[in-house]
Length: 184
Image (cartoon, rainbow, N blue to C red; front, side, top):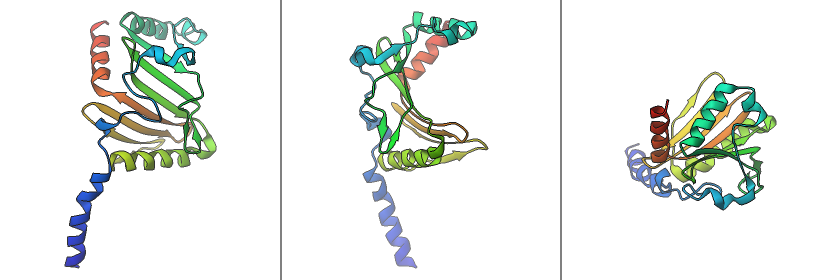
């Protein structure tokens, strides 16, 4: 028994050696934070607030147009690159830019027949990359987060509708939140 405990104590620290810190991640699925908005070319649809969904919701339209005035842009990625994760395909990719630089990207998977399978695949993939993280389980959703000082990754599953993967620059996101809070 003592030998097994000693072996476990020796092996446990080495598990972390194979996982990289989330802060050292250069990108996820080919998308690198901090790149220029123009790098996505015609594959990027910049949301203006004039779309029908925003015209039907004036408060959302006001909020979005305020963000645009402050240098914060929301966009949908329309291209086919960056969508495939193993055998799973993201339905939507949304991006946020501040002063023309990407600071947040979100992939959404909507295959209802494979929600749990997609969630587990992403969870395993990023646990292998960034190390173990505590999973939070609620009535209708589950999530796992890897929080670094510079970058943040989250895998989230709404058990009724979709799986979401978020990759974000923590410092820029905090700056954007402060700018938004000041501009109210």
